[in-house]
Image (cartoon, rainbow, N blue to C red; front, side, top):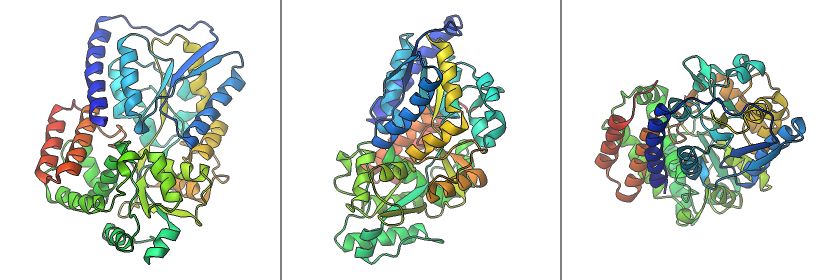
Length: 427
């Protein structure tokens, strides 16, 4: 599904680029209106609650505006991207929509589909309170084109404490390695339990499993090589990562293909499996479902990646031709507000991106994640479209999916090499 979705986006956007280049620029309708349309992919329990925080805060400021919320089901936004591509191609964009910084955002900027929101960034103080990597990810040629809501950490390992105890597995702690994790997966399996929950109905979860394993092998230096298109996809490190990935796949829940990410996360909380690795949206969902950190479940940075923070930064952009441009700009200003960012993060399990927000009222896990965001090496996620172009992102999904089916190292590597060759250069 993700392959078809991203391919549809790439095909649609290439046509959009051509049409945009032939047309005249539009700054949208700046006249006062009483409508605002937004599109996101937040549909799980914790996501919907967090989105309502944003909408309610906006309504409190602009009480006469009716908000049309059109969420598109599909974890990771693959389906939403297709809907957006179709809307943009038809010249009917929503006023604001959800996306990710860096490569994903740059794609919209290059298509001249999103408005310059540098004034919002400056007026709300985001230009002085964002980690530099995140500010850079919102910036193209010195101007900002998106406003972040919060940040999720992508490289997190969650585990069910009761299931580990039943299998005689010591809960992960400092110094825990990927090799130990693989061994623990086998212990759980040998004990009759289900080792690893994956919500494979949302394909980003399987890709994220490999992303975390890959980072544990290559480290931040290897990540830099990927971003610079200098990484050796046929090298020994890839083979090592694929071998570990294959062993992890052998431990995946047999029911994974029928589960969305939030269903798999709930299954972990209920004790239906021992481990899950993905971004800490899972933390918000577990808490929303009533599970207690430190009693029902717990979490650590994915082994071997402790010094890095894989950033999944949900952001909103404003359409250049927004029908309700003033309301769109007001909405972006609201989501940048420190109080709103804190309330949003409490609901979603994320952390505020603003460094001037007091996070002491958040959970101990979120406080630790906030410290990691502010003090660790921040790396953009490949899976969520920030590290590399949409064409490479599609290739990454294709390669992971192919390996899941065939366990063919050579085919995996060649798919990524082809994706690098097809991808446009990074700005």
